Each structure stands twice: as C-alpha cells, then as structure tokens.
Length: 472
Image 1 (cartoon, rainbow, N blue to C red):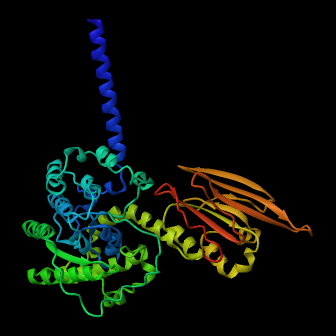
Image 2: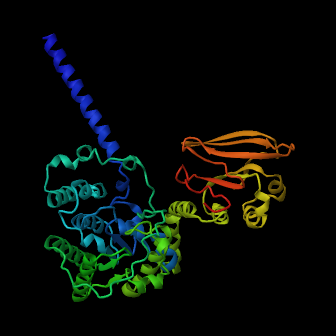
Image 3: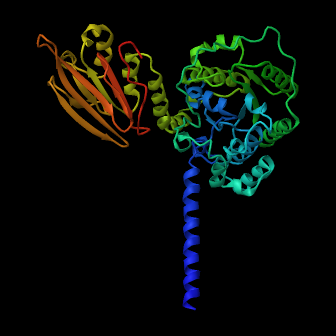
C-alpha cells in the first residue's frame, strides 16, 4: 500500500513539475514582441480613430504625430504579418469595447492570400484578442488546425528554426505604433507606372473578410476608411490597388492612396525616409502620419480635439510616456551632434560626453550645442569626460585630470568612463577618454567629440547615437 501511495505521489509531483515547466514556458514564449498591444488597452478609450492592418500600418501610422498635427485622438492596432481574417477578429474585439468615429484599414492586409502566410504568421496577432470566445472563433475560422497551436508553447516549438533573439526582445510601442530607425535609400522612390496596371481582383476568401469588416463597421456605427501606404509597388500590387480603389468607390468608402508620386511630393517623402522597400523609418512615419491625419480631418470631418481643453489635457497625459519613446527613436536616427544634444531636454536621459584630442578645431560646431546642454565654458576648454544626469545635473566631471575611472549602474547596463593621457616625443600630453556601456558591449573612443545616451524610459542604452565629428 505504501509503495502504491509512493508511486501515486511521485507521479503527481512529476505531473505538477511538467505542468509548471509548461506554464512557465508558455508565459515566456508569449512575450513575443508582437504581443504587447492588446484589444483591451485603456489607452484606446475615447479615441476618434483606430488603425488596423499589417506591419506597414504598425510602422507608418503614429498616433502622437496624428494628434500633434491634426488634433485627432487615435490608437494603432496594426501588427506585423496580420492576415485580413485575423484583422476582422481583432477589430470585432476592439469595437465591442470602443466606439470610434472612424476605422482605418491599411491596404496591404487585403492582398495577402490565405495560403501565403505560415501558421505562426497568422497566430502572431492571436494574443492581441482579449476575449477568449473570439480567440477560439478566430482560431477555428482562420487557422483550421490542431487546437494545440492555440498555446504559445506549441506554436513556438513548431517554428524553433525561425526563432531569433527578437522573439524575446521587448519593443516599446507608441500608442500601438512601432518604429524603425534604419535608412535604406538604395531602392529609390516608387515612381509610379508608365501605364496603370489592369485591375486584379482580391481573392474570394480575403474579399469575404473585407465585406465582413464593412458590415461590422456599419453595425457599430463607425466609418470605414482604406489607406494604401508607401511601398515599392509591383505590377500585381498596383493592379490590386486599382481593384480595391474601384470597389471602395462603388461602396462609397473613402480611400487614401499615399503611394503615388503626387502623394510623395505632398508629404515631402524622400528615399531616406524608408527603412526598407515596404516600411518607413520614423522620419517617414512622421510625414505620412501628418498627411493621413489631415486627410482624415477632411474626409471624416473629425474635430480638432486640441481645442477641447478637458479632452486635450486627458489625452496629453495618456501620451506623456509615449512621447519619451518617440524621442528615443529620434535620437537613434539623429544625424548631427547638435541634434542629439538638443533632444536630451525632451526626455529622461543620462548622457556621457568626451572631449579629447583635436576637438577644439571644431569649436564653432560643437560649443553652441554643448552650451545649451549646460556645459560651462570652463568645462569645455578643459575637455575630458563628463556625465549629465536625467534631471540635467552633472554627475561626473574629470576636471582636467591626467587619468580617471568612474562608473554608474544603470539598470541592465554599467556606464564607465576611463581616461588616460598619451604623451608624444616632445612631452605634450593629450587626454583620451573611453565611454563604455559594458553590458551592451558598446564604446566610443573617437578622437574629438563623443556622446552616449541612456534612456531611462526604456531602461536601455540607445545604440548608434555615439556620433563623431564626421557624423557617423
């Protein structure tokens, strides 16, 4: 009897261990970068406009810019790889909670056929849906597969060869909007077609979802608006664009085509505003968001809520934490030393500076910017290294010493300043300062001027902002 009880107890403990490990793995694997925006977010409460669609919309449509330029309160529910069928279920869940005046659907989500996307692609937006009933309904309708895939553990196990560090990396959103800081100008701008392609019909299954989305918007009393975002178009995409445009005209649905040479000119969009052939970086994001905001003001007749004091104050409070993330991205894309330094006042940053070697040759370029950041003339002429804290105070100054070693713990990074004096054959000494983020494996030791910036809002070192005198 005792032996049997021992076997039962041992089996129960083993089962609990397996379930516990599965629960932990399920939770860890559910932290995919695409899972952080959910349909029940309170940040979407009371918004006039809600965006839905794929990674184009997720990267290109920034609610902060739409607010700043048009006074429209909006939130972005787009997600990378989002299939049009998934969009329909995400939209259902959101519109059961929210009552926007307008729903904007980006064009690309209409052109991805059911068999184009992998199971993991289709499931990437599943964690967005807060309503379990809709989750299962979407799963059954869109996936047509084993229920095991409903759990993140099995979804990720199925695609273990595809997993990268990005699957565990948290990416901070701006009211649902992501941001790219790459610049890929080699492909140039889409110049349009010499002759507009013939219309190519959207496939029947995708068309059914589009019609369901239209019916849903009518049921919920909000207008549906379609937008074709900037991308390097193929003939096929151009034909589908034409078909959708003609269908939308027949249905009386406003359609914004932001992917034409005329639209590019109106926005001031440049080749350097693209992160790749289908996504804008944050400079392009600001331009297309401002363009769409103005278009929505005209087409949807949306009021400028910046003039409504109570609503504007409440929405600004909501945006406060997102603005710092948006500023982080601007810093990461800054092209000049002056631009980086000027942005420090717009967020919570710790910044380390080094002035060594021949930096005085560039006094006219760097002194005005440093002065605005609080560097005194004495500090500037002395050179060396110094660190500015997040409230503008100076945490460290090498004070002209021949050598220095100073460090500061910043959450997951350690900031280290290490300096030594190098002497030439005539006995002339030059102080060399190294700025090191050791856990991020980043350091800047250029001869001249360097700056490293740590973001307290994201608790991370902002890579690629160590800018030398040549701007690299």
